[in-house]
Length: 636
Image 1 (cartoon, one colour):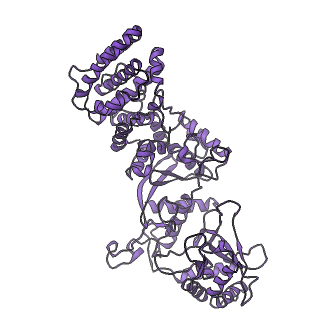
Image 2 (cartoon, rainbow, N blue to C red):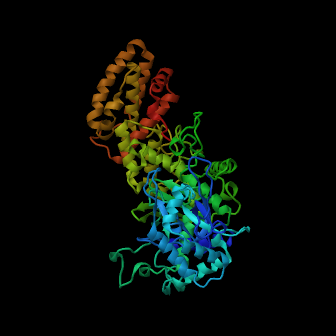
């Protein structure tokens, strides 16, 4: 199903005039330099011209379409008409340090020479004959000497190189008509045995090896396999490699090309959620497909800084003038486009339709696909796969925003990213410390409208007990988790647990409220405290209230007595509030609270503190204001 949808998406993009996708048999590569064959003379050194933008600290190679890269599983194998300097010139760096010298690469250069001698045998094209002349004359030893003498720039060593010839408008050798014909003939000569493709159903040459997929964070930089059979345990009936699950070379190329395009780090379709690099696409025509994917990526995780303007983890380090640089991700998004996406997100949050908020070419029945991939050694692990109507997915995302709503605290009109949720759950704020599947499980719940994973609530409670941060994001996650576990329809639960509910009789909720009042009373009676009852007793009070609250109540009696000496009116307010909260509690407090009631305890605590900040006497507000960090918004 995944390969079929990707293959069909490739066809739609090509039919829609997408010139960024490579044609069959081609691939987009980063090219560092070009060897000028026009000016090469036997016995001499060909000019090597550096390509791309080299004005910054880190050079940016020129990206261009070249003959498809061969998949190197092991050993030495050459690409056609382009490759690393070790193959094209027979020279590579002697080490990994910047000052490492050059060394000869005889095996690689010989493989490159042999490939082109065979593939171009019998050619009469002047440019291709010049290439064969160069390969016959050149040696790796001369390449090393030329690098050391400065005749070949050291920056080209270990980079990807192409050949150029002539002085016309088309100089790249791989683009010449004779070169394209030679590449087509070579592909046909090495094509695999014919078989019936499991995706298309057509009898065609079967791909022995599937393309490498690049762009998945944490995977090998050279690319990893989505489909591979590289061990005998993966095979059956004596079949080898790709023959175990026959996919035609055409389909394998199509899904690999379009998936690599989707995973491009500066593209519109990609976002990082936990350890899963996630891509979106639809069956809408361009440019509506790009716009919809970009908006949805930002809707579930606005890593572009559109809705999380203060998201420090997604921005570069501060510049020399102290101001933050633009976000790392999505370097191609202009300020105007960023404004359009932000406006679309805000419109969706307010309930506008997709046609109104995003594009007239989008409608509820537009199909949406979401694929999450994570690294797994030389392979890719499938974190999640989601397919639905675009209208349903947008409704589910919008419901996710509303399920997180806290008043005050979390506004559904300012969407919170999944990244921010995960960061609020991560020890030391590092996503690598979270369970690998958590990001994908939350993502699936957001897009499908299903219950959130149980470990989301467990982790939120664990982090609250560990660092004492009862933040809006953690409370919002507990609230959303409880709402979806309740079984109520979205409209029925719309106002549940949004703000303080004095009529709520749940024991966990009431105990959380009581704990917040007792803590505030302590701060009012003993100003300047370094630690309150929350720092010492929150974990025990929320888990085993039967043994802890009697101790807290005895302590509150002393705090109230001290306060009553100087501020009797304020002490009376505390007495009245405590009595009102206790009135809804059972006479015997439970010995233990389960996970759900611990979540309600945190929500009750948060609601009561927020209410005391806004609706209580000035002295109570002052006591709350003494420790604002405890209810911060993390990265909302």
